[in-house]
Length: 536
Image (cartoon, rainbow, N blue to C red; front, side):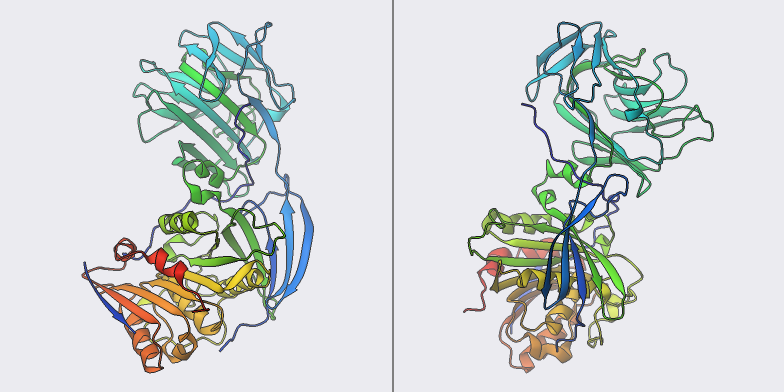
């Protein structure tokens, strides 16, 4: 059996600016105002969906302290074609495993050989190819979404050659596909009225490689991955000509594997899949990094004024979570900094990848990692800052949270009301703007959290009495100019003056805003966090 990866609906592009927190360290120890919101929890596998390929179905509805939660599911699009090349039939064809009838016809020197997962087809670089007749299933244009996924291995001495091509074989007209070039790099290329080639960043070797091309009509993007690494992103755009395209489109001509008629690939192709929807980049990445296996979810928040916010979220569920066995789990909320804002439901994972991987390797735990948007520091970010983070050291508690933070509150209340959470073990981590958001959330929801790790943030000193029962370990670089370390110092002083003994602060001498790596080098932070319980 060939390995089939479950692929899911598309999210937006990866647009990432890392803004984490980052010596000799000095360590010291030392009102619920959220409106009753309505949250629609859209449990999907992507942050966005496409009307042409998605259907919704209400599956559960519940009322909690945070409002009404409606759980929805989304259907995927179709796998249009899948060639696993497990055998070449006696009539010289390779089967399409989907049953859609897109049979490949073998010509020239093509052999069935052992590959990465079962068999594949080997091309000698001498013009052998497999051709699939054109079909309406493959005539995608810029207003369509689709994806192509290929696994291949190149011969060490291979000359430039075409692995996959949709288009003409005589070198005229338009075509697009993947080629290896004279520098042993993989190219995503097309030709038409203009020629465009996007080369991979690194030279290929004679090991197995994985290509994914995703065109997403909703986001207006084309992305190209090699071995889980984004190589290029661009915008799909058809030419004005009805015949010649100047974009990555599939139309009007046969598909070929192993040759474009002039450039002949030398190596083995193991699997090719074509989808009629934009698969989610997180599944591409999940093969290379565990955290991208976190489930994608969407929550629609609505406050009492009718204002709404759609919160993208990634959630890790422990094995056995859905079983009705009465078992409860600790839960960890992670809020990212400003550099990871967006709507791709991916960027918030990267900065926290190592600590999240650490915590799920040690503990059966729920991990909730939402993503807010950038709107100038008004209402779609964790805090209303106008991006003046350097002025947050003595902030007061706003009358109402931002829509984004209120949505996070609703999501957390949803989990806490589920009966699946050990309410004595509710944890939080945050950096920069995310740390500021956690400080505010703890001030508003004084009974929610057990413990928190906070980096380069700033709290609300006037609400220190609400934090006396929370174990807090805060970190701050002493030369942080983005969020001055007085943001942590003032909270430490206020909690101590209020009689608190559960906060400790570590000040990293000579370290600036990007303090995360230095903070986690201070000790076993994750071990400390998950060992805390309200029962102690």
